[in-house]
Length: 429
Ligand code: SF4
Image (tube, rainbow, N blue to C red; front, side):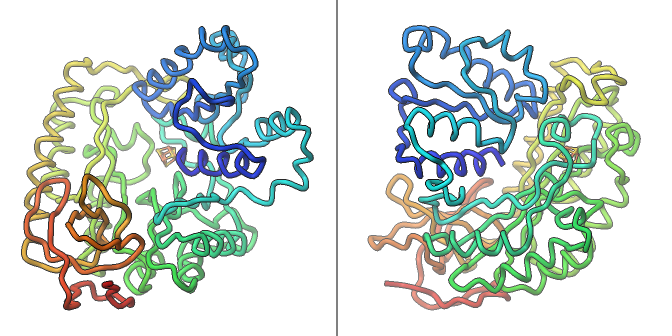
């Protein structure tokens, strides 16, 4: 979501005539787009902001802004802590910076800024479709920083996706903190499935993805849309967060271990070649060894394609901060992360080995260390060598070696796509 926000802010600034450069110390304007979902992200953001203190003192004319989840409704503390910051902006609050720059440049932004769709997007682009979250999981800071759920209309989103495709995008990932809640806040309710059907119609768009899902909002019509729409990829990111029911309850997740397992079983029965990734927190308040074992068993049994595991860290102002105790020792949390990562590596090796000798459809995104890099419909990273440029095209790759995190293969001339939903011909030059 932060990447999508940064691209949109960048689009606004580019429309004012500014240019992106990667050397922050040479830039006239620097924006730190912050994430505070975990303590480690917050520490990283604080370190970056601190590193600009002496620089700003020596260059007072430079504009330094902080955006994103670090910025809450009341910034008194932040202003005291970081007096060298010129502007604090909440997530998606682009106007203060754009207005400030326009004033410096003597420009009337009404006639300059058309919309904030990225000007030079990559082959694969992110499109936020719903902002905020109404769930209030006890560990999570997001609802306090990004506010309540607010969906963008299907018309606005279809238009934005068409614009992105005109600018060269071939894959769109629809984003939301809880993407399955899309449209529930409209007076005349809509669903993510309605949006998927609309976007599937856009010519020249090759693939559609969405994330992140909440198990309680994963409705049958969304699963059916993934199963049937040709451009929607067979991939779900479905966080389970904890394996023990007691922990799920104090996390306020709203489902049990058994309900989660049944949901995954149902998805796999309807979409046999689906890939499922997940998020997991270990060492949540009062999590015992036996309860951690439930999470470990979940990883063993569910055979996820990827697991994002993190040690619990208290976020100030959350329900867990006010009502629970962060009492699992840091060393124990680290050990639990290690155990999950070790097991998941094993699972990922076995999952990917099943693709050895098969042919997969790859959307080529970029070149990396002399090899072409792209992803399968199930979001597996694939590398292959070829002298032609295939950026933005669908190609067939015969998989010759596999590892836990990526696949290597050879481009083949004969289409032999295994995906049952492929609608685009191979595009070899
Ligand atoms: S559903 Fe996700 S974003 Fe919303 S409160 Fe829970 S963890 Fe946070």
